[in-house]
Length: 314
Ligand code: TXA
Ligand code: MG
Image 1 (cartoon, protein in one colour):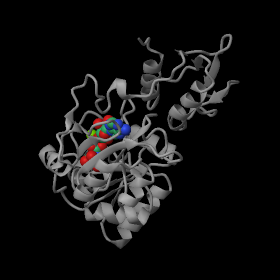
Image 2 (image 1 turned 60 degrees about the horizontal axis):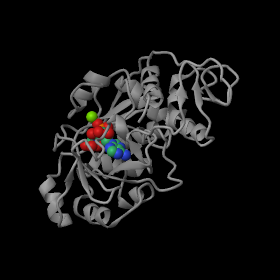
Image 3 (image 1 turned 120 degrees about the horizontal axis):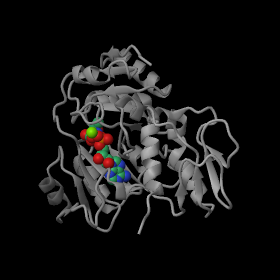
């Protein structure tokens, strides 16, 4: 499907159009002080699935949830003392904090890739700020580049990579920082540097008055890594056209089953439901049989996730 990607100005009209498109579940790229983000309503699973579709990403990675201010961020992440300190010092700005999810957060489980933590950021770019306020809710936004390509720091980069695949780009010139946000993990006992970025680690340590643990990939979990992703307790069997014995059956397309990712066979709907349905079936305690999912488009990321869930574990 080819869209005509609108180029919007960061004036009142452009912001209102962008906010309206986002509210309708469309994808809009917007500038932040770090890089251009590819935004979707973080509460709308199908919209978030569209991000993966547009980027051509063959796997699901948890996404950063962009908020207008710390008050909005607190409705999604469980606050603690270091979060308070860092938010005061660096928000709005190029700092992302990973915190435990607040119960009843309302975010799509595709945003967190089924994890029980969420990455939160309050950007300071004026156009991002105005858009978040006009939209009035959380925006999931990875960098606005096709999978495997470098991040976009101008609207021209966004159009070159994603033109025809997204509804609009809000063009406000080049991004001043040009480097992604620093990610600090605050969901464990000590603050951890998960990704270096726009705020120097030394500045964060100075404000915290303590050194940051460094993600060494061993004990602590790196962003986007296999180990950080939600794995069901139950065993998972793939390409199952029917359930055997006591298995619960996760379906796709028209069929009889316990839960159906998309009765109509829509891959975006299936992606939007994937983590939530795996959690629900896992809670039954039974083994999970999963119907075949086509290896095309979003099916690649869905199957990647399912293969990890089905892989033997220690
Ligand atoms: O500057 C930025 O951060 C840009 C702009 C658009 O805000 N966004 C960005 O998003 O770089 P993305 O999706 O390209 O990178 C997000 C990183 C990924 O490495 C992801 O694994 C990590 O954040 N992440 C997201 N949620 C996480 C979580 N709950 N736990 C650990 N890492 C998480
Ligand atoms: Mg990126």
